Image (cartoon, rainbow, N blue to C red; front, top):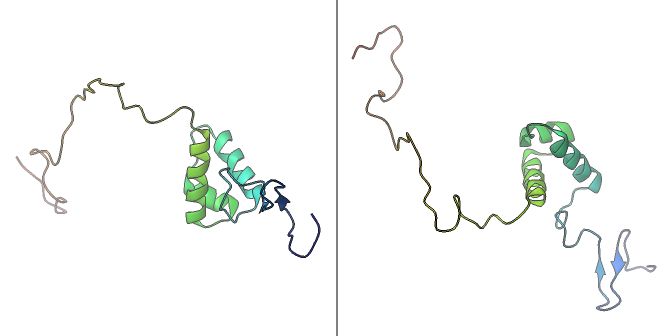
Length: 121
């Protein structure tokens, strides 16, 4: 496209005559980050054996922690396969949990132990 109203990277839909970018409808939509940062984040997340934290993305890519968290969640959502709508255990099944304590156990004292004192029961 040529003319004063066009910017670099914009395309024109000849059906509706509106301008659009290639990121419309993808996980990159409504993000002001350059695509090379997104691709680096994809490489880091997909290439790490145990996963990668937002803090590590933040330090490696040189973006803010909030941006790294946003990118990580979008990328993990894109990598997810299938729907997450099914409940744990299956439809209509009961989930059993063993040895679970809700709240504080009676055997654990509340708060920290004073220094230098021994606790006797």
